[in-house]
Length: 425
Image (cartoon, rainbow, N blue to C red; front, side):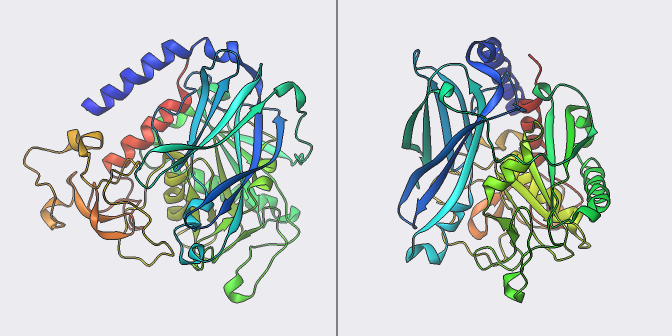
């Protein structure tokens, strides 16, 4: 309770500071910066690709800075004249995941990335920071942008769209946009039905169910030439609008797309906070990357469960709590520092996590025994490793598909994100 009250005080104080900031510094549209991450396991470079304007800003006009300090990267928008940081946001990428694979030890690769922010009225400085192995953000790129020099994105395809849940102004709501992937034009009725099923399932669980009035839901009917998705391990390749594929980094069930530019183009026809990609396939799998996108197939018996798990990654920055499944990652976490993910801890700085939610009679660490099955504690195992990383509950939707929902700590983290993105001025 103390942590939530403290968070609310921060939000209130930030709101008081920033109420007039949006109108002072920004237009009602957005600006998009496309760039490439290039490097290997030990090096990274930024290569600019293009800068353009887009028609909508779907994010908050009140909370303009990266208050939660989430993400493996962050970017800042700095007013050139006043040197004030007028916007900042954390994010994650496929690139930093790839850097932890064995392949990255021997080869260099490029990964496309884009970021979106409110359209500045005046010239700004755009900076990108990378989180070091020690957990600190270090500047890796800086570029001056005069917004008057850029035009609207000519790559936006005007796909048909519909708003199936309308609770008001995007600036004071969480706007989720669902994109169709691997659906032909003739299959758009199926896309709408699939999306509605997954959305209905999401709102069965807390904290989504008690905050439904804080959401807007958009569907973008981005049709593909062929049904399905690429499954390289089975030599199956499809012509789809967002170029998705299984076997990411050699993992059969890891479904992603490296074509983030096309994802942004399709989403840009509506205002949005978070992107959800639905893939017209019965194969098990998905993926979720913080402030990037979540992606899931729709026709597997566990597609509902996979979808809200991946949304936990992309929307709320939650980490995976499982620790006994094989992944393609090598030393993903530094166990000598506290991870930024709100549902994982190394106990290095546990006061910053869910310590205040633990009863005085609960042992730390907490044994994975039946008597603690419904107890908030500190259970060893999480973040793909069995030793040195801890999670808050015996089971949770961020750990298994059998869990009935999100644990109290994950619910608290999701609720904080909903509040940040829907707070009224």
